[in-house]
Length: 212
Image (tube, rainbow, N blue to C red; front, top):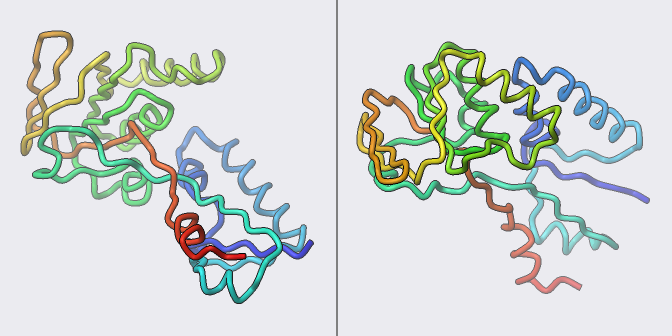
């Protein structure tokens, strides 16, 4: 088959490329580089820095179209978020220098925990606020033990769980556990790493265009 791969970014890898930047994810980066090298050796035509549009699909008339656009961070369900600056975990990995000294991370999954570790390694004070009692519940036992051990060894990280969605005011974060509310002062930034939504823009355009 003749295969053409369109990638909106200038590099392959998507979110996996960002995760590979983490200091303790060297093996992850090696696996990603292997996949990219294999794609190139297989003769796949790469269109980097180009977002595929319906007109290109209509003109190229491919026999098969595969849409694998990944996901994007979902806006956090946090009161006061519209009145205060917040970042997604992708913003943090792309431009960590933009994040202030004292940071709150909202989420209890793999991405939230890795983001907290990443920021701690950069010297930030981190409050990891999890909506669930068990962190990274979907992770295998060995990898989970290693990740939680890393979190517990970082004095810069405080873990709060299980918490209801926090309430945010400029410089202040209100956390509620059961019926008790705690105020955390001097929060410079809030990082949302709790939810992701599938990237469906292209698939919706294709569906609306009713391509043959």
